[in-house]
Image 1 (cartoon, helix red, strand yellow):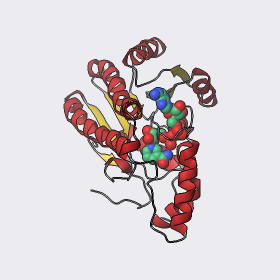
Image 2: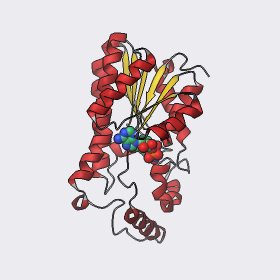
Image 3: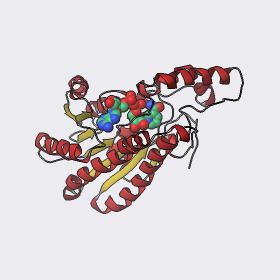
Length: 272
Ligand SMILES: NC(=O)c1ccc[n+]([C@@H]2O[C@H](COP(=O)([O-])OP(=O)(O)OC[C@H]3O[C@@H](n4cnc5c(N)ncnc54)[C@H](O)[C@@H]3O)[C@@H](O)[C@H]2O)c1
């Protein structure tokens, strides 16, 4: 119950999904949690359920991140023990054509036919804006927030950063060039920063979730039975499967763990 007692934690993209569950478990383990998301009302609604604070900002925007950290310093008296860089997008948000394509793909797969198209369109369909948004939210966002956190944690001589990667950071999914690139970048960033900040007793690790049931994977619903069948543990993951990994990495139980990638994925993808 007290694995994070007295810690102050910021979780980005935490209004819902994996971020919200991480924030919830952190609070139960004794942390003071700051819930970030794009929309203040949504962040506040989640923060209220766990007795935390809410701060809105688009993590892909450096100036907004700087402003958010100025607000955070006021709330916490200039302290930050844990940063979870969780905010992310799939690129399929609000894309009805993608839902229809997924339904067709699932039908083909269930009929044992070779799929004629990829999950989210091929490289020739990716616009500059889509590419930059994907890299911006995941990789720029992780960089901007980590840089601000390091400005607090280095003088503190302590801290903990957990970055949200994905099995797609090492597994190449057709139609996923932007997402896979962003997540692979996060894994490289994690290792470099872990080495750099170790001298200040700041640990940096990544989580690489498999297929987890959240709003992000909801458009893939027609494929869920197939994904579960492909997973040795026989199911998709739940947000708690990731939240407990984050609690572990953020806690002193992992005090000798840095520069690592922990991948709760039910065995769908076995790496390292
Ligand atoms: N669900 C999965 O199967 C899965 C698997 C691997 C990795 N991930 C990663 O886990 C993280 C969380 O995913 P999820 O499934 O909870 O997704 P989700 O869509 O349910 O939640 C993501 C949250 O991030 C917020 N967000 C998006 N862009 C933002 C921005 N620029 N600034 C601040 N907040 C922003 C959204 O508003 C939302 O509340 C993402 O980084 C995702 O890539 C998810």
